[in-house]
Image (cartoon, rainbow, N blue to C red; front, side, top):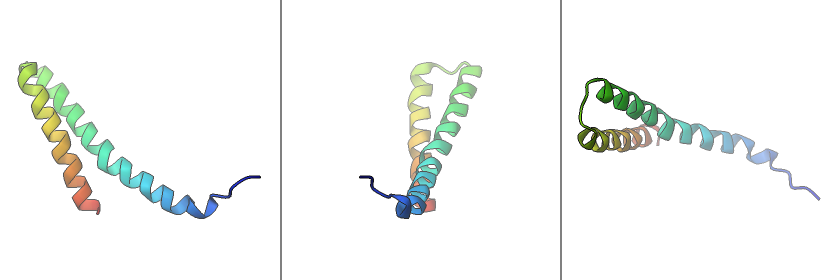
Length: 67
């Protein structure tokens, strides 16, 4: 006995695409900011909170933009 989930495929693809857009793009931006701050020799105690805030702000903005 197997359950057919083929009718949910379209909505699951949309959910996955939204999740990738909301979380992955801000993560890439925060990662780039982290590498730039390391290259500029910014102290880690200052760069880490700023990077986290940039990620959270980016995720919020992407969520508001998509939904």
